[in-house]
Image 1 (cartoon, rainbow, N blue to C red):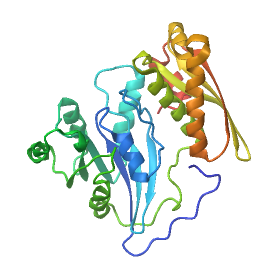
Image 2: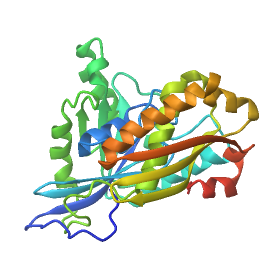
Image 3: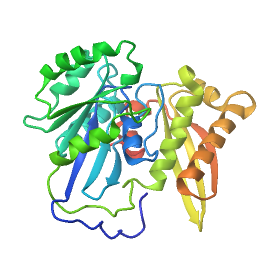
Length: 306
């Protein structure tokens, strides 16, 4: 969590390694699930709906021998062409130019044009680990080795690690393979820090996750969350949030009959936020209509998009 004062950096012995690691891939390959699994706590929201992750989300893992600063990125967009998607793609390309190591995540048994586009974005000479996720969902495990041989020709990957982020299978092996690929150097964050994102940002993200999960296919693409007020009183957090929709017709979908849908969304978000913040949360949520916000650069900046 973001702290009011800088934490003391973790102690580092000889040979300690520290680096930024980008987690990239097409939508829905499990990047956010992998980030949460790697750091051992949920900070990046997850749903079955494509384009759930829209922002750069940083997760920090400190071990005795290394500190990983993982950067979860939006899935690279090839279908939608509005300002929101351009912003997300810009985030991916910026991250790739700023990190020490890249995890390219693909799905076991599936390597298509969208995956090829992601690999094609990799900077020349980048250190890259290919992460083959969802191996637990591969019906015929005998297909895994030929699949690895096929995709290994796409790029000179430093390592190839098959795993299941959902189950945690082989995740430790991924970390062990990655440590020698990080540069030597002291840690950049305190040993107890898990993200550099603010509580305000996380509150908006967790609420947006509940919108994705509870509305499912009904959820309009043009939806966002804006935290209008975030106050802390001891262990209590008072959060006032607006759900932004693109059209007036979408407002009723979010609110639901008699307001029940919005009440459920807010209630489930509040429960998760209380676990995350380890304290009581008062959460008030309402719905606003901002037509065309997803294709308005000024509106995107006000909502925290880069």
